[in-house]
Amino acid sequence: MFKILSDIDCCAIIECPPCRRMITVDGILYFLSFPTQLFKIYYYVGDSKAFIYSSSRSFFYDGVFIYDIPLLNIETAGRVCVGDVWINEKSIENLILKYLNFYWKRQFHYEYQSSVSWRSYKDFEIQDLKKWESKTKADVNWIPSEFDLIKSAYQKDLFFMGMKKSV
Image (tube, rainbow, N blue to C red; front, side, top):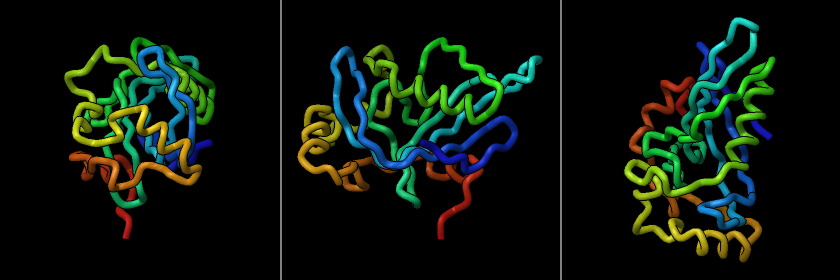
């Protein structure tokens, strides 16, 4: 489930509501709750009029601020490393759906630790995925909040990404 907030110049801003889901990190399965998440998906339109994925960025979002995501393979600038992947579809909606399915089913791993936002959480409890999972399982209403997360240094980028500043 997602909402397209904007789609301008081959760049779609997507909002995914809070959720609880299984993810794999270095071969271990975790059940985690996630706050609202924004994705900025860059794409181009090929000769066959297909929408083709180019790259993406992602942040947690509380309606006012964006936050770095404490997972591996995501840089502090929100850039998502998904590896060498080819995603194309006949509509932007299908491209987004396929990308999101790929994003959540892939394995997060330690291949690229030097610039992941995960490292910025070293003093935060949420970096311990077992503790994050325990909180998720203990309270069905718990989702990471501003107290668990680090505000992104890229807050101003949220607004050039096509979003309007909240009042």
